[in-house]
Image (cartoon, rainbow, N blue to C red; front, side, top):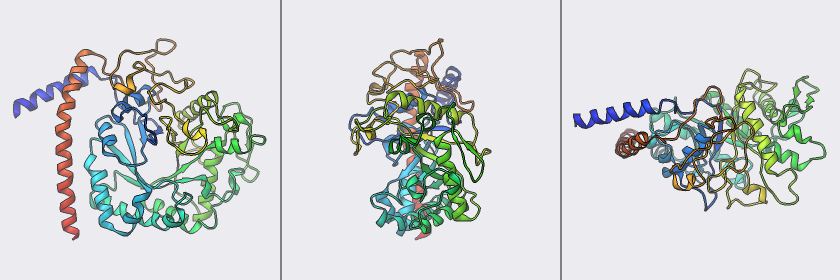
Length: 433
């Protein structure tokens, strides 16, 4: 056993030495939503390499599928997992259900998977099931937070909720005039109280595209695309100048929070934002050129680590929607064309200033690299945010061998971790019962 451990330690030492430039990118503030409403996506095992190709180290999931969490194990990618809407009634009414879910979908995958937050539902207050689920939202958040506390994870894993801008009663301009819808205000106040008490951020899905597509005659395209040269507008009540629509949308939420909670104090994080690369004939502005401009500008804004005009000291944090085009999403064509990547793993378009490290056209499907494509000046092909280090592909033959060896060892580690999680969960349940 000692010999086995010493051999493993030697292999790890060699691996670290060879892969020194490949530190995880989770220091970056930009993230991406990994939705899977499709039947033609690459296997989850290939996704970390795709993320590395654009320097993204943060991912938001809409569930906590074991196969996906295993794929991110030991990658350093920071994960936000989701409690699906269908689980809210049970978790809201039964503390044991919350405890079982937290044990099976969070504890069982730590520390290999870097889970930092759980979103309870998605757009629950404005979704198709709002009438039945709205009252479940905060009780589910409370029970899940209590479950994480019982497991000793509440300091490491936040509980939050994600909302559409449809929770606002007024448009995003002027931001100072924004308030929450009166019919939703009781629920929103409870949500804000939870976030203020636990220190977690309010997640908001903000899309300048939809505002522009709805009224292209009044909203300038460069303002919606976050172009640095856009003329912008000044809020008549505050005098603050807005040079892009996303800033206005985020600050509208901040103003609504201040109005609802008499002072605010809750950080707003953009959990979804993006621009479609294609759409139906009547979907104004849905082009690959505009999508590249929007997402490229978004990454530039996030990389500056600056806040919005209203909260300049709080860096903007955002998750791009989405990683892939999802061919089974309902609605107009644009809904199926928000992805940075196509189903085979090739870029949908080239992001400005973001050269892609592409391991051959079949990388995503096979999970094995066949070569590299450098940037225009021989760059290695990574977009670095806030000093994040690039993640290298294991192209060195020795590194490949060591990686394969470690993967087999990590399988044993994962099994041991899951067994320990089950034992810990049973101990907690016995104490409660």
